[in-house]
Structure formats: C-alpha cells, structure tokens
Image 1 (cartoon, rainbow, N blue to C red):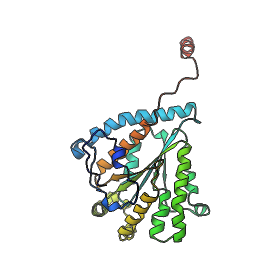
Image 2 (cartoon, rainbow, N blue to C red):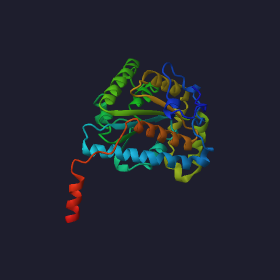
Image 3 (cartoon, rainbow, N blue to C red):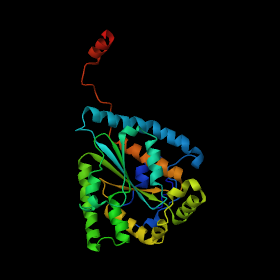
Image 4 (cartoon, helix red, strand yellow):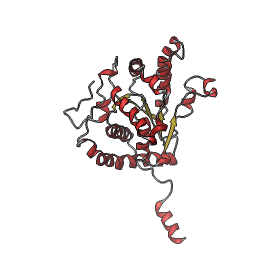
Length: 290
C-alpha cells in the first residue's frame, strides 16, 4: 500500500488509509503521502480543518448528549495512537481536543507500568482507562506497547509476547461488542523526518523538555521496531478494531487525516439528538408562568 492519491476522490479516507489485511511490511507505506487532501498542502490545511471541525463538533455533542439521557444505549469511541518518537501523538491529542468539547473527551497517556499495574495482567490498566458511554477516549500509546517495546527490548519471554496478540484481539472484540468503536492509528513517520524533529528540539530551548536522550537508543533499533509494528498490524487488524496507517511526515496532514477518520466513524453511528423525556409545550408554559 503506497498511500498514493486515489483517482476516486469520493472514497472515504478510512477506506484509503485502512491497513490491508495479511502480512504487513511497514516500509511499503509512504509516510509523506497526502491522500484525499484536495487543497494546496499546508496552505489550505486550516480551511480543511475548519470544515471537519464543524461536523465533528456537532457529532461529538450528540454522542455526549445521548449518554446523558440513556447511558445504557449510547456508545463511545476509542482512538488509539501509536508511533515512534516525534510521530506526533501529543500533537494529535491537542488538535482533536481543540475541535470538540473537552468535557466529552478522556485522555490516557500510557507510560511505563507502575508497581500496581505490574501486579496485574498487561490489559488490566487498559480496561480501567476505557471511555465510558458518550465519551471519546484517546490513548497516547496503549496496550500495543506490550508487543512493541517489550518485544524489541526482550522485556518478556518470547512465548508470552506471542500469546498477547490473541489476547489483544479478544479484548478488542469484547470492547467493540460493548458498544465502543475502536479506531487505531499508526502514525507513520520516516526515519529521516524523525531525525529532523529531534534536531529541531535541540535547536530550540523551549523544546528541550521534549527531548529525551534515551530516544536515540530506540532510534538505533529502528528496523527492529518496524518489524514489531508490522507484526502488530498483521496480527491485530480485525474489522471490529481496524488499523489505519497515517502518513505523518507532514504534521498538518496527519492532524487533518485523524480528525477526518474520527468524523467518519461518528457519522457511521447515525447519531441524532435525544428526544425529551417531558412535554416541551408543558415546560414552556411552566417557564412562562415562572
């Protein structure tokens, strides 16, 4: 899959960026592509974002409003962000939150597990962070760390890592059946662009805090991580929890693409405004007389 621009511009972005089923070689994805973006690059990105925001904001409010009327029948959305350092997970979080009402968004950034988390199975902390009814949940890193960094760094026995793919699929199936739409995004950044972004952090004193010397240790194992990502995208890419490969060399495109995919996902939920559980005419009369 090259992520090249398709001739049919009426396609949904989800169909274009959907990771193909079967063996995945992430080196075949074009991290600098901008499929289905009809404008003139970054110059037109703000206008494109505004168009998406107008729809996304409305849909998110409908999702949230329905949960306040009947949380037992309202679904939720889980946005999973995975990618190498500098791919832009934090930037996406900021961008998406800026498009919707923050009260309808829950965010969890998964760092190294705590002592309490290590005392449970690797999915325990993820289950505890799932979005509730009416919410858009965002995972900055996720349960996939347990088949990515733990695989590359040999932090668990090989047979345990192997078993986790099946456990993840079953977990995601259960989450999906509970009413949560799962949207998994692999932020595909090239090694050369990562180098530029790391250097940019060192050239700007206001960005020193973003730089971690340990990032170079991970960078030195780039090929190993690409193999690990390929395995994760191959083994855990079910229709109920699909992977989308997001070209991320251009920040403006990455942000627009994920917002667009999120919008398309919410549109599929056929959200309407909840009907009142009271007589509108009677309440109007009461308000008038008050």
